[in-house]
Length: 208
Image (cartoon, rainbow, N blue to C red; front, top):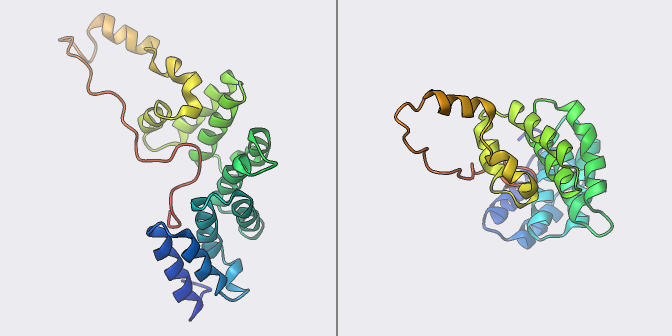
């Protein structure tokens, strides 16, 4: 990996291995063995954040993400990581998580997870119309918008929007009334399934 040389590269790889096994403590021990320069590498900070998040050490996770945003602001994951931890850390909370993530949308308008998380925060803050708008932006940025809808219907943060998500759209009503794409009136396919993306928060693990 660019910027990581022996033995730092080995400790980094070992940390990822421990994390894949669910052993956050051992992963952090490997990270602690890295040189000070290697500790500032964005890929190392990603792993460090994941290890602290796995251990639910949210203040430490926030600190790692804060360094990641400062050192590599072009990475959307740092912004997502930071708000995810900020929501959960002592002294944090939803309003602070929202305020920290909102500027990221202007930087990364094509990243669908940022508006998705903003929808989660807005819904939990009781701003349901705003949450709906952010969710539609997430769907618009996602390669497969239907997967965002399925995820939202499985996400407790977005439960206030479930009824609206499940309501037939006017276009769907017209298709049903006129026979449309389902002329024989066959029942729809099986209900929504989670698409494998996390609920509010960054991609799982250190890799993506």
